[in-house]
Image (cartoon, rainbow, N blue to C red; front, side, top):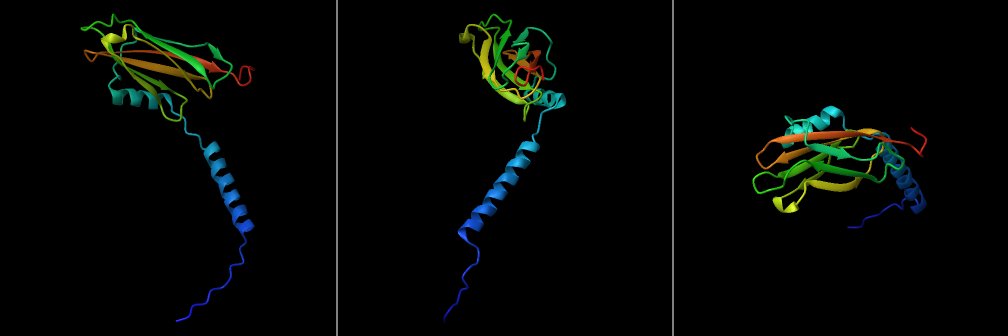
Amino acid sequence: MTQTTEKSQVSRRDILKIAGVGAVTVGAVALTGKAQAKPEDVTAYFKKVGGDAANASKVTVDGPEIAENGNTVPIEITVDSPQTENDYVKTIFVAAEGNPTPEVVTFNLTPNSGVARVKFRMRLAATQKVRAVAMMNDGSTFTGDKEIKVTIGGCGG
């Protein structure tokens, strides 16, 4: 049995052009279709992790009032807790309302942590509220938040 094949008229250059156009199209869709969490998404996330009935006390979210560079915004979360065997912060959940997904980070603490304070840097693309819920070892929860204004190029945008 003999088999004949026709030589393809599509060159390697044509294939690269098609692949390039496809990559640009996918990239454009990805950039324009940014999903951003809404305040109700953050509330739903905290409800899922058990922090929906949190008391608005004990948790301090600190960061700059205005962040000129949203790529590395320093955040510090402090919970007023003695961190003893009988009374300590077990988990700190952090969420942001303008993130693609609400959850930013989760910290697990023990009485050996000494203090209930965490510091980290996060990326903020726009002005948004950063919220935290602290879950105590007895299951009670406390919350705090801070709105951070992100300027574009230091121009107050």
